[in-house]
Amino acid sequence: MKDPREILSKKLTENGISLNIANIIALDAGSSQVSVDKAYLKKYNFSESQLKTVIQLVSNFYSGIQLE
Image (cartoon, rainbow, N blue to C red; front, side, top):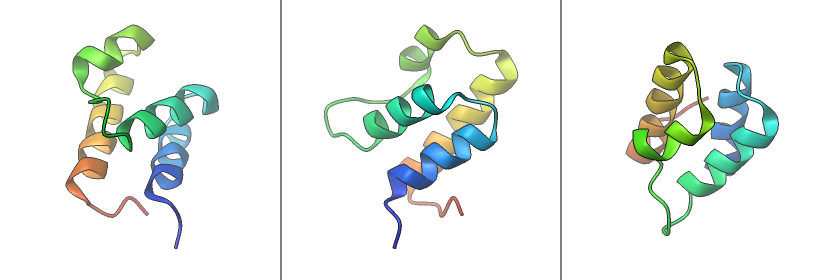
């Protein structure tokens, strides 16, 4: 079974997010120390479309919805 953070990172890259940023977001989303939300994502200056996609993928990750 794949680590859910790896799956999240893969989905983010498939949606145009650079691998480096996708890995950071996935690791932070899997951490109990950081909450990946809209305020957190502002620092990446995503386009509105990318921001919506990232929020949806991260929400699914937090909700336990299968990403693959």
